[in-house]
Image (cartoon, rainbow, N blue to C red):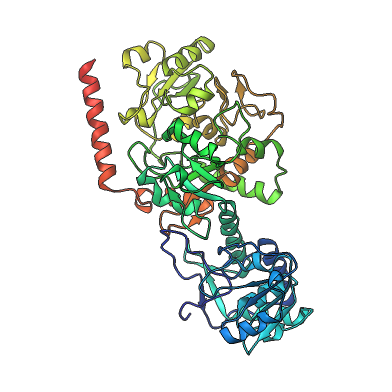
Length: 537
């Protein structure tokens, strides 16, 4: 292989990303047969990738002519012959989304080495080439299919693609699909102008997941900085007055929260999330309103390809012992073999998911009492929430009160290992119930978590009637872990599919970026709080 090539496909310049070459000049690349070229053409049209597809999307008239010529004299001459109200002239200092420019265009006039010519031809838009260049063969009022195939073949045969997450070779179809994944993320952020409530230590990993291509999202600032558009809000960290002011300015509020596969450390310890969710309808843990996640689960037709991917992802998560905050293969010995054991995971009692999803049940001790009332002969294992155990959040139960109801308190080890040990899992709204479903365990819900109401759990809470679809575990995984969240690779800083992050977490903490003075200070603060709490009892 040779050096980096400016290929037709390129990695968008996501903020903070440590980008490696995507396309490199290579000798001996395999020849693409015509069916492969046809497949690439179809896939590129569908994914709308190639060129600077993350660039600006300025207003353009319909049935317009696009002029992208470097020579200012020639550019001015061309524009004199075009109705000014029917032309869009590219500013060579700007980066545009070429697919946006060619949409509904009547013609593209560009330098013959401008990849805008190739994109116009792929989109079926007539192109007029200026001068000589590698796309001169596409100069035509009606793009020639053989010429287009040859131009595309030449672009893909002159370079090899490198997977930015693994460093291994990718074939052209895989490179197009990964580019399409990035394009879909960027397009979903086009209207986001600001973000409120995102802690400073979270911003480096959140920023690439909210990037709109044109500019980095602004964190905080004045509510009146810009009217309209949409603002991403971490609602629990934003004052009510700020939310009201944003809405009064005509700003649409989009909720963001940690994802379901978060990191290899605690948020309360200021370990930044490698996954977030962005919800435009509501928020997944509030059953009072339909969220994007609920809408996906209720309405989507999941393809066999997506379900196969969900099954493999579920198997990878289970085999790796991964849960929201940790990955562990540590074996937890069974103290009372043969008993009907029930795992009850504690939660942060003042967390929004508990307050709105628990429907009045917010106490961890009360949850234990309800489980004991329902299962008087069971061996109940209680696992305190990691943030509570770390001394940062509300929800601790004195041991003597806990053991008056439960049989065992387990503080060490990953929740995934405790789920494997138990016969059933009983939860308020804890994500541990979803993790138990991944592992084939019976789950009883006392609140209304997002995974309740689809025929997979025993539901004691008031599940909304609108959750009428019956789903499989893999359909739930496809919705909750593939379609709904966003992930960032802790190594490259690039947005990534969930499989990449799961593999990183399976490698252990050394594969993720989490060590910092702030993390150390928060952990020390938590230990101090725990010691003081014990002394006060």
